[in-house]
Image 1: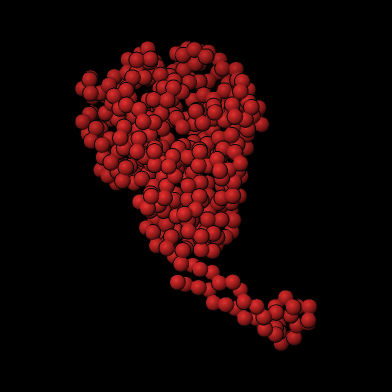
Image 2: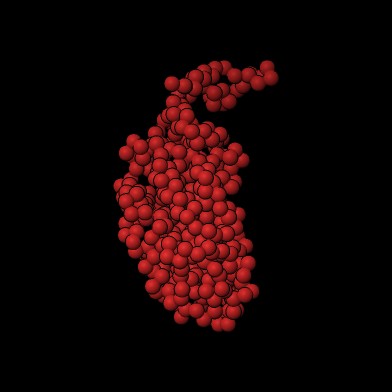
Length: 422
């Protein structure tokens, strides 16, 4: 066990000048409390968590951490508590991080919570120390291929509501230009399915040659990986890669920024290297081809998804789409682009609202909705399937029902194009 040696301070002189009684009282002989650094050493010995030791307590992370605005958490505080001998594996701190990457953006020492948290959470999961809500989501994903616990056979049922052709590759067997990876919430959640119907209609209006996997698709698994279940992630990734290999396509277009992150950075490590675009990027290249005939005369603000923005540097494509809609007044919130806030759903947070309730004064989604209201928005536009349901719930819980509408960008596009009704 490493310890800082006690420091004894006696009679003091500076440059040979004896200090007065008032000064020496400040330096009376005393013992500085010992630190037990063994816990910190245990943490930094875990592969991926080494950089926690780099922290030198500047506090920049605390100033930008969204969780610290509604609770008592930041990477600096994690380091300090660990330095004082508090086990991070037994602390709520381990599960509060949303992996939004705002701290890494400002950290001069590159303390990387995006690597630290998944590494330590994996250890906690193996030691059965994860919150039950999270374990339930893991179990549902392993059993059904999605964290909602829905039947995999029903994954493509939303296409019956689309009103336009949505080719399922296992039935068509034809090569396509675009393999659309729909993901779980856009396949099962009612508001996610609304966005999927809108995107299917936009694809058809643009003449996009596309297909989906339907029941052959499973969760991309990136949020499970960040929450500590790497084994589950690898199982899901290997399945999806095998499904992709069955079909001919030129690129993958994803609805979910978390899937986008996985396909760009994690799937290639497992042999799945594909050209991948988020749907906003794909549509931004073709927006001039979409007839946007209906003005949307509303004040709209946009929430940058952490895994599209800070994690992967895409800020312009969503705004190009919004700016193309006639009548729409785009207003930026104070926290936008690189400094954007967090919905609270990342890093497993989507499944930890009950756990977080005991450690936060309000949900991060509520904090964000209040900011949108502050800036006078009529619509909070999003581009991540986690966000519609989270923000709609937050609109109600903050007493703003009827004051703020939450819409996926593709729903706004489809409304303007006359493809869905307002």
